Length: 137
Length: 137
Length: 137
Image (cartoon, rainbow over all chains, first blue to last red; front, side, top):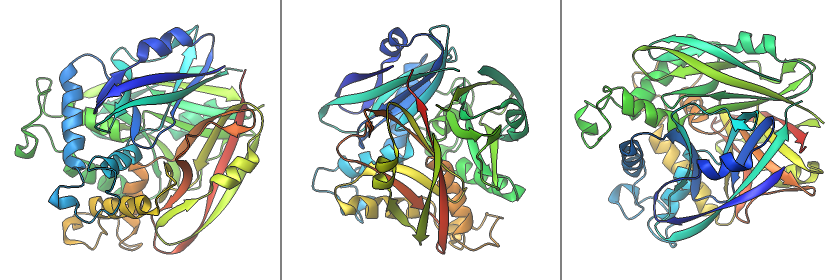
């Protein structure tokens, strides 16, 4: 069982698409989500307090500043904008794919876990997530 | 084939549960381990010298200090204790799931690889790891 | 369907093995690549501008300096060389496994995504990647 989800982003941030995935999964098996880009990520994170997402973004922004920040002056890949190479670095640090067991038509997520597309670029993008469910034996 | 493992933690650290998983897997297929929480992680790491684990924890503690450290004063999600938001950040940086090929009833781990639950919170917790094996075709 | 790839490395860097994997996959299902070591990683990254790889390595080298750097003097696991404990730390931060949906004999990679072995050690190594394809239901 194979499909793809399209997530439209409007700048850096976490975009919750747990509901879309929940409606698609069925039966018993292993769900894989795979993002077909190298400047955004997938992430499972807390879905309760929105401050968690604000803090996460603030922390990653400090860890990987824009390439026009003086501390990043050694970077070479800068022609596509100051948010481009930092986006590739964040995409290395954060998951390109997620795997979640599914039983009785439901993902086995914990109570506080949501599924997010983590956009690292400043401009709006249309992000494609490839999804596959392989059956439990 | 689907089960869950419960790992009881007593503060920050790496808890080896390779043996429990090794006893459960069977046949040929893909094993997935998925942790149902957003303040601890799963990790495959060196299982030989215990200093590796001590150094890993020390490094992550310096990368992500407690939220009452002056360098973290910008954080908002602080009401659940100084170890809470750093735990969410570490949970973003480290795996929420692991996948290991299994052949002839054995995980295809390297000699020096062990499977760990990496606890990021200070208080004792009971952590649930969802496990699924899907068959090789 | 299970095999292994051997990647010979000659010091730190990203080694592209997308082509070898592309020739091996077949049918429809989920591909998993799993590296059987704790001092190198797997990574999906941009395959267009080689400067992206140079910048990625430079950034990780600054985030995790060699253990003989004064900022790393707290490390204990140092007898196997200044690149050893940093390699374990990078192996915790970067993926030990990758999962990619396969449809009609082709990995569902994005246009700019390549598959790399990210070597963290200074000396040449022979790295083994366990590969499994489980069938789509």
